[in-house]
Length: 639
Image 1 (cartoon, one colour):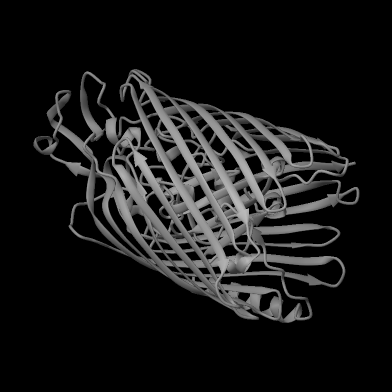
Image 2 (image 1 turned 90 degrees about the vertical axis):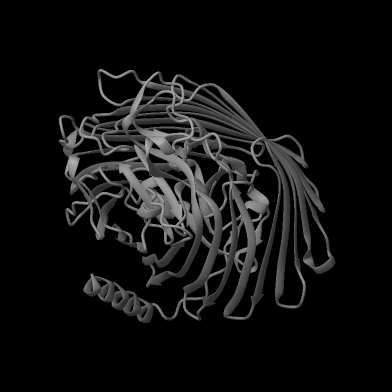
């Protein structure tokens, strides 16, 4: 591993020397504070994936794509979009908020579905990964970070006519078939796009079954310029995932589970923009049905949830200190109907304000505050302060904020509605909300060559962290459907947690002659987590202590070679009953080679996932595939 890291670093240095005559990168425009703002002025460590990155990183689904983004730990249970947990800065997977065009998308049943992003990859304009808490603007659950998906329809600039069509087919080992098609059309007043995607395979052989999956997605988006001031954006999507879920949630030998998750999504934005202000009405709704069968003879858990979210937002721009003031009000309502967890409703509302301005010549300040009322934890005040001091080549930044996360329906009510539970995870209605104080300082260096360096140290003091902990029958507060000899894990406020860490991210964008280009991103995150007591936990103990992930592509007029790598060092775990093991470290590589045809309007591709054929699992019992060969073709037409 040391040789690989050293070789990669030396290669980057050689490329950097070879491309020394390239102009400075322009700072990227981002929306991390619900406003467009230069990345150097935010006071935050932010990674941005462009639409070209999304097309070229060797991945088959959005969760696989995020594996190769510096600072994100993706814990996969199954391949190609079956199920993954997103973790940033060593928190639990429920502490990452997924946002689509400004609207929260986290499903209220469980954080395991946060990576189910109902957007066709061709529709995505960019993905912004905000590392660290951002609850003052985006609301609860934004504790470890935010993954913000920004689409073409909701950011379209009207004025030109254009038509495009993109399609790809891919086949490979284990009966793999992947297909995508996307169409879009725009004119001076409207934009419409639609897409279909399927990832399907029989999967490798497992204990008494195969690791099959059948994951399908369809979405359509529409934007309309009503007049010079008003514009309307609409979206609808349907998502269905049917997959093997053996030992996804348990380490029992009798576990031969399968799971089917289907959801629909609707979204609306109505925006009025003038010279001095922007007013937006935002709303989205999500309906999800989860059917989980532990084994064929068992009664399936059937959970249906509904999420509705509305946001009124107003931004005023001032000449004074280049200031922008954003205020708004957010309401979301969650509901569940379940034969396992029962029937419940949950209401949350909040008001927020955010001021960004240039206090001195080079000092940019963002002050945010949010007042929330939640059905569980009642009132909470969430402040945030970001500072950025920008020089010619470097920026110094700092941020301090609070964060909060309430328990989801699974943590509160899992297995509550069953007549008899002989073992497994037990919900806890008495859970308190997690609260945190988040601090970070960092520096960004923009060299005279197109290389950016981002260094950050951070600390999160967290109280009442929620996780699953092994618990004796006698210590479980509610046990009318439990048995004294059962083996249980109770959802608990396990501890006060002190997490310390450091991030080092590097990126570059180079040109060599007229045709050859190199783009790369790499980053290392080191974490140390200390608990206030010794109560064992499940998800907290599974995150990486050292994470290195990267992506790189080289392209010219003939084609593209792209690579993604992940290295993790974490706690070793074993489950003898199912002969499962979490290794103390692993290193994986995905590789894609593309040959352009017809002046880049079509191409042939070879992709190899897990190139070095490493045997690994991100979570105990969930075995990931070995080397996977895939072949395909694609076309992309514009008019």
